[in-house]
Image (cartoon, rainbow, N blue to C red; front, side, top):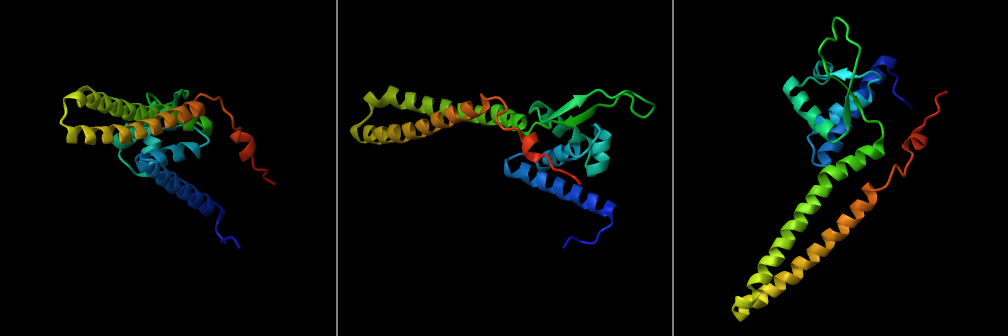
Length: 188
């Protein structure tokens, strides 16, 4: 049976739970928890929020908010939006969350995972070339170990090439899932 809360308390608790959960999710994927909390604050806001709004809502420094908002913006997870200026809203940047979850996933995969896979393939390739270039000059016992290394490194290289192909097949697709249709909740 649901807790007997005041309706406003319920909204505050749900908001806090979502911010905490998105912070934990961000940390799980190797991002600062504050990035998840910032995204959550924007996602749950019906109106764009300024940096000052986010500072007040999350209780963190403006520098921390600004730095993490720049990272979120680079990832395409939040967008700066124009808000008509009034006496209190002059010269402030306002942001809103990207609501297309598939776009968020593909943006993150493209910007971070693709780069990591490419770097790993580069290191693996360089090490294979390095070993092959000196293989003929090696003593027999070193040559045997180098051949063992080549075989093992080639396995890693094959795995990362597969990961690269899988990633490209995911990020190369348009929005294959209609999250909007899946998540529509009928409120009665």
